[in-house]
Image 1 (cartoon, rainbow, N blue to C red):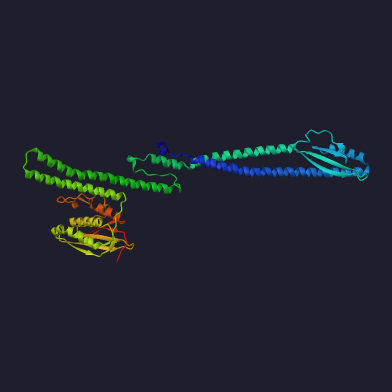
Image 2: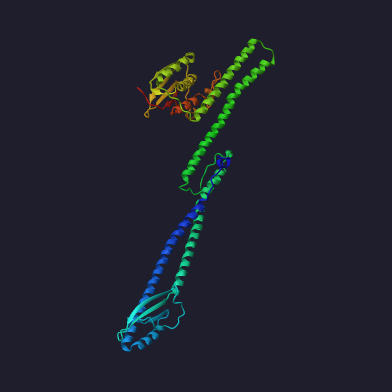
Length: 454
């Protein structure tokens, strides 16, 4: 496949023109069939009229020749035939004897008796006095009716074409008027850019067919606007979080280079720089993990394990900070589910770290594991401490979000990605994160979808 074929763009088409052509074609076909039927019926009526005229003329001529032959013979027949010629215009009569000789012929007429527009009919007459048989051939002039049929055919063709053209024009005009809301929507979408992200699609006269599209587009723009705002905030938070350790690294390094220092001082500086570097590495690793989760990466589930056992393993890791704060902990309930043990431990560790950080000294933490109606498990970590305002709860799992300054530590600062990672791990297990806070008790946790085992 060459580049030209690979980059070929499908040809666009006009809905108005296509509908106009389609309806015009249908109109021409429909009108053509209808008017062809009318023309056929008209031709049949003309044919029936000619046959009726021929039948009437033939009966009159036969009766007249019979009467004349009974009264005076052949001479009376010739007089009667000559007399009748003036009283049947548009006809031509020839009477022949049985031997083929001509008995009578009308005077010359002003139409071609051998043309396709002339209609002929034959009849037999017997002279009762002599027994002679005469054969008559009557020709009827149908040229006027043929011209009438031609004019009718031309009129019907013109009417069909005119009807198709009119329908095409009317359809194109009507479609353009009907599609004007789409053009308005296209102009509105063309005007939406980064500087006008709040603009939404509207119509002066809402169309029932377009309203779902407008609502879906506006909903999409709302999500894009929120995502863009989150991205801007995220970028600002990342810059802020990385700026502090970088400033510390630069300041300590410049200070170490400003004058001669002992090996012990340089070693202290290197240890301090290492802590800042590890903090930066932690932020970067957490951001990479969240980026993978945002791409839809799912957890690698193993054999069903006890969630309570995983919590106990994590609690052992946090025994030192809990003892320092005088905290105790209880674990209630259990579920066995196929989960990614490392990720679940990380989520529980983040929840415990968050609870230890904000719990009142000497209080008790509680980890509750319960079952949901859909077969999922829900894990809560509850602590006693300052309540979180209700308006902050929906954003608690946003990256770098902190409810207020009083909840930010200076001695042991953290970069605000712990609960975001909890939410990401929940999504990787087809669950979700959740938080509640009231009356001095805060519960933060997540759900995990899976099948329970005994």
